[in-house]
Image 1 (cartoon, helix red, strand yellow):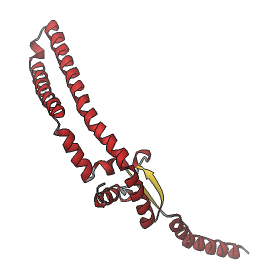
Image 2 (cartoon, rainbow, N blue to C red):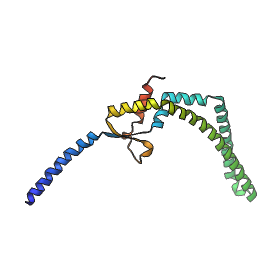
Image 3 (cartoon, helix red, strand yellow):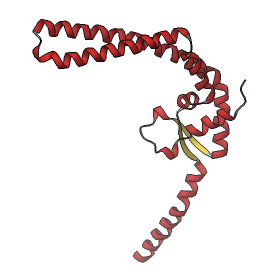
Length: 176
């Protein structure tokens, strides 16, 4: 009786071992995608970003950023070099000057980021229908049963990502 139970369990486990991979395949593959990255890496996105960076306002803000960054770095170096011999009042004044310069730098950085993000948001909205089309095609051709946005996944090996495939497909589509 005991032998029959063990034999039954062996047969059951063997059958289960052969059945589980088939069930998993029937469910489809799991993949992750970073849609924002996929869109922003396209040729059209790079072209738009270059256009934004070539605008006069952006160039002026970038020049201001570079100037402020250089001044800030020089102030930091001077403070680090002279801090040991500075009086308390001089240190407070130097720190205040650094804080003001950093505030100016953050303001200009914000303006630069806002210009780039504005172009990026417009592009994301514009390309949304194309992205949906590409995703439907990839889901079908790749046999994907579960597609997750990369930002909502704690961990996924690079082999699960279809982001580069989405970018490639978007680059292959004709411009509208």
